[in-house]
Length: 487
Ligand code: UD1
Ligand code: CA
Image (cartoon, rainbow, N blue to C red; front, top):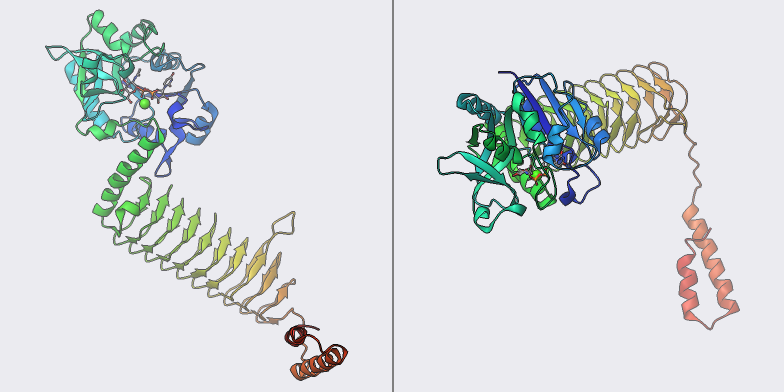
């Protein structure tokens, strides 16, 4: 049968105490809602409608996903009201409608597929995905009659002491046949402690209308854990971390301390890579085979080749690093930094929107921005590309085999030709031709016997001072000490 999905994500997330919509809070660097949408999209629904409300624009722009329609819930009147908001988008759809909360990122596509399979097999018009848990607090309890039929769902706030003891809970995931969904939603009344339209009430209404309702238990109850506050956010982050890290380790990657290693489910890491603790691998990042990363490295949306070493405390975003490169410790690779095969980026080096050619070295204390470095270039310590004149950014082009002396200022736009050399401490403002040596610095002045002259002057001062006043010994030592510093 055909499938459509409604994801409820309009809530404020009051318990998060945040100005950001709850579903945009992140787990391993990805918005909560994205996990739910990924699990849903694996079922290839014909249509997916995300109901947004609080922070709607923020949610839409941060997801920016294709193949998704949005419905807007103007007032947060409850989950039942939210689901009804998707009606216009799904008015022509006929088939099964999967409805689920946007705040439970641990749900897997496997469990959703199993749920859908069980629903279709049951022949019921409605199914609810439930879970058995040790601590049901906060969740709606599933009330089942003697014949194992799902009778209704009672929210904790509305439950009797007896009902609260029930350990089977509602996951907030339902499949409802489109032909009965909209009439059922219309039947919901906000008659409960919270004065909200509860989506869960469709179960009782359906039973009254003589429809059969199935309860399908999820096999791993952690999958349905919802995020309502920051404590739950941290707990789910920990579960997700374990889940992803186990998958990563089982694919042949060594994590020295998985409890302290944070890898996004979007990341791909090659065999025999070794990741040291305190490392975060986020976004669309790829790390090649046999690369060694960390400790304490942040990598986001970057491509790291094979056999790369990224040493301690590097921050890498939107960069690409070729095979066999070494980076760090303490290097900063910013967006569009391209470090080609076998190059080296050393400590306290920042690289932005620049290409460092194969085998080239920027080993110490440099800023390279808007620059192109050819093959086998050597950049001396403390070199800076002065790329910004306060209004515009300008380019620096350094050809193959150039040797840039330490502490060179390359005032862009400027080109240094193949094999050219710059003298240490130079400020290079004009292009340097191929094979040339460019020196642009103040000439050194040497004053001979400086030390002798100054001490002679000092002792002369001292004797004049003594003849004027012999009273204070403290004065003597002070003037004696400071003489060297003066003039
Ligand atoms: C809901 C269920 C509860 C279940 C639990 C599972 C109801 C009444 N209760 O409770 O039985 O055990 O989920 O996690 O459905 N939302 C809207 N608009 C609204 C209200 C909520 O879009 O007006 C969205 C929220 O953004 C959220 C989802 O619906 O993604 C669930 O809302 P939430 O307030 O977290 O429901 P729970 O109290 O957790
Ligand atoms: Ca919830």
